[in-house]
Image (cartoon, rainbow over all chains, first blue to last red; front, side, top):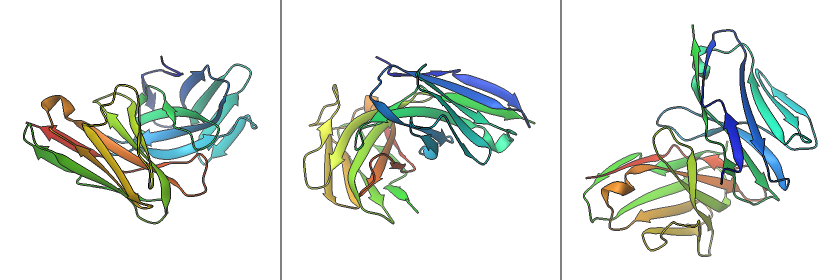
Length: 112
Length: 116
C-alpha cells in the first residue's frame, strides 16, 4: 500500500526552467512533509519540509506548495541547474517521533 | 551540523558470513535511529527503528534474527547482517533523529553491501 504517491517518476528540464514534482497522500494524520534529495551512491539529504499549518514554504530556489484539502503537496525548483540533477523523494510522517513514509522518487535531469 | 556517518561505505563479503555496519551521529545525540534498505532506482524501505537502550522495532517482513540491530549509545547504532546471501546485496542507509526533535531525521551516506 503506497501511502504517499509521487509523480512523475522521471523528469527532464532545461537549465533555467522550473522543475515540479507532485505528491499526494491519504492519511490525514500526516503532519510533517519533508523533501529529500539523493545523489547516486549517497544517502538522502533533507532539502525542505513543511507542516500543514502553512500553504507554502520557500528556501532559496526550492518551494513547497501544500494543499491540505486536496491532500497534495509539491516541490518547485526554480531556475533549475544541472547540479540539481538527482532523485527527489517526498515523504510524510505523523504525530512526531514517527517513522517517515517515502514516495517512490523522481529522477530529475536538468539539461544545459 | 547534523552529520551522520556510516562505516564501511562499501563491503564485499562471502555468502554465509556476517557483516556489521556502523551508523554514528557525529555532532548530535540521537535517541532514535532508523535503518533502511534501498534497491537500485527504488525508494527507501524502512527495515527497523532503533531506540537507544531498547530492542529495535522491525517492519513487517524483516527477519530480526537475520538483521541484528544494536543501539548501545546515543551516537551509535549497528546493523549486522548474519549469514549473508547474495539476495542481501543492497544499499543500506541509516538515519538519526536528534534528541528533542519530533520530526527531522538525518541520513548517513549509505553502505553498499555485495555478497558473493
